[in-house]
Length: 206
Image 1 (cartoon, rainbow, N blue to C red):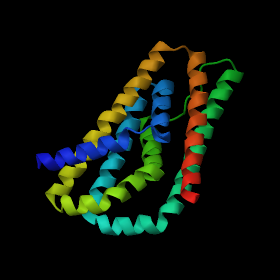
Image 2 (tube, one colour):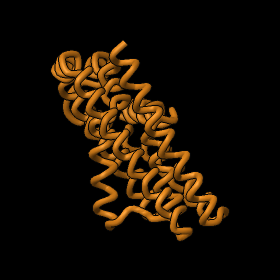
Image 3 (cartoon, rainbow, N blue to C red):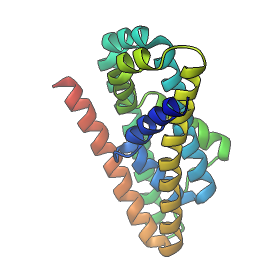
Image 4 (cartoon, rainbow, N blue to C red):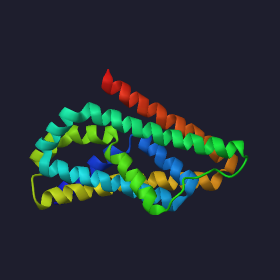
């Protein structure tokens, strides 16, 4: 069981470490709204990774067949959602600069932050493609039952460690920067989210 947990932990960490559009969005949320929203956003991402991992361990071949058939559609939908989220970030920060006011952070409480990050992660193309690529090996090496749950918990911890580290980094940046600089960083983050989403869609189409 410890070995299975370790495999899941490494898989979750390997999924989380690459700096994609979701990581940029998590940093930006912590920078704009503080530690609590960043932490809940990171937990939402890790919990979706947990759900994917458990599904892969239990239904690897079925999941692989589904993503093989719908991977392009899911990638394009996910890229579109990320473009919309990036555009919202840009609009908020442009509005704050125009009014020379504090950054206009997203409205809503922690529940809305969780749902936003969870929904974006579910449809995020790299997440789906990653689990598609490891589905055959996971289903054959981990097996069913308790081992599948232990593997998924390992993914949860591996992904969570990295996501919460990003949230802490964003919170630290918030403490060390003033409002104008945070607004500029927010603009850059929104542009980066859009650029990465377009790149993912382009790569899927080409």
